[in-house]
Length: 213
Image 1 (cartoon, rainbow, N blue to C red):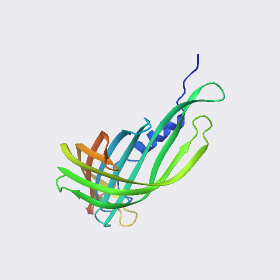
Image 2: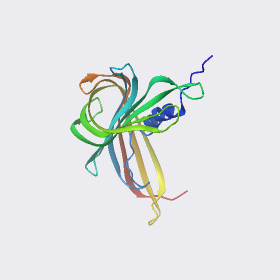
Image 3: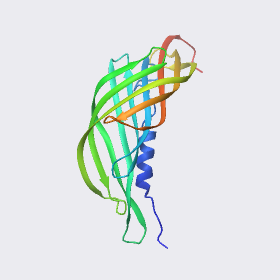
Image 4: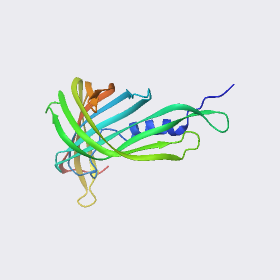
């Protein structure tokens, strides 16, 4: 009996997209102010060849720095092929954005809704499922848009005394407002299936001095 095999490359590609796309915390130090608003959508779609892809789109707005950062990628396993050792595996196709142009990034102040649209340019890579070798690379550009409507919102606030490395202990308050959401999204004007959607506002404020533990 011929054994079917799903190479670790496929699982790794999908998991990497999910793990690499937590709602962003700004690249700030433990005692630096932070004010970041993020939206994220996980999605799936099937192309004309019948291959299914899973992906994630995310925009982080660092309101202190005045920057908006897009993270966008998708990947999937293609048709089964028979390998030299008699097992079967799927070639892996992944797309990862390298740069993006944001058209719309409108998030309600209370995280009740959001409208986002961007065009992402990047590279699609096809990897042989049997050998793990890259078969092809090509540049691509994709338009992605989504609307979010919050269905539940949670606010947590934590205070901690942290060492700022100079003056001693400073009081840091981290407030995290997060919302699960329903969503509608389209990739290159074609609707996609939503896996999850969320909004998040992460704030870190600095107070006065405090005694270190």
